[in-house]
Image 1: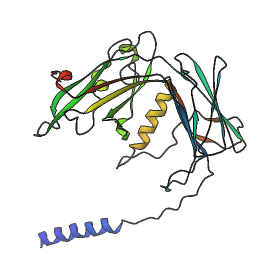
Image 2 (image 1 turned 120 degrees about the vertical axis):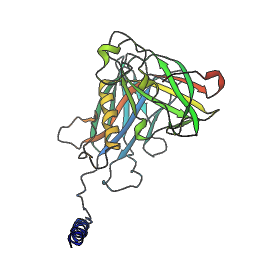
Image 3 (image 1 turned 45 degrees about the horizontal axis):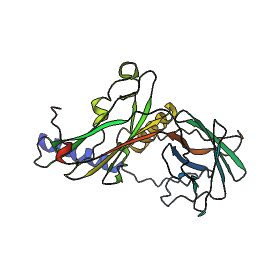
Image 4 (image 1 turned 90 degrees about the vertical axis):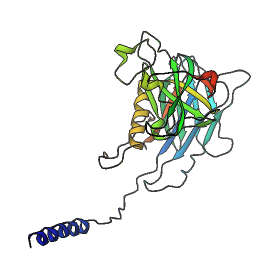
Length: 300
């Protein structure tokens, strides 16, 4: 009887737990449409592009509508103005260089100006310095300690520039394809994690940052790997960190959703707000093949 009583209690508990499961069809209010700005300008040669779209409802998974018929310019602190044109009327506003002209220059500050549907938006950003990537090597490793499947782990070397706090974003490409999962948003302060600049200024990037350029499956023999080191501002660092946090925010301990910060400001405080971020960056790259010439031995 005692055993039967315990079983009945367990069954009752399970039924009580399952009966509390309720599907809720949430109907969220749709806010006003806002301008969304995707602007990442570099010091590299060639055209530069700024994409403008309109925000959509939270559960709307369709392609965002293009924000067309806007006037988009960028002006640097030397007084030079760069006009961006949406020739295809698709929301991609492009600046085309003339001859060997380059838009981005280290040390210059750039102001973005967008006029759209009677509103004027502004943002400002500086192109900061960036060190070169000295080398890119590969070490043979198992995918997991107990796995029989092997691959190659990549590691890049760069030395932080001394004398000031520097902020970076690291991107990497496998066989020409950008690895852009949320976990691949890699940021660094002085070659380490945020807040470590007092002890890592001017030093070689720390091991976790150097090893952050690997896909889950590791690399295969004869893969082509490219690593980009981008300089960003402190505000740009906060933007990428917040974006990564929101994209990976899930599971049992998820935090309430929050807006990612923006530096796109409406000149009319009472006007419609904008989303997105204006980033300017200097870029240094290094590419290597996963081949014996680039193999090294490592104990870690």
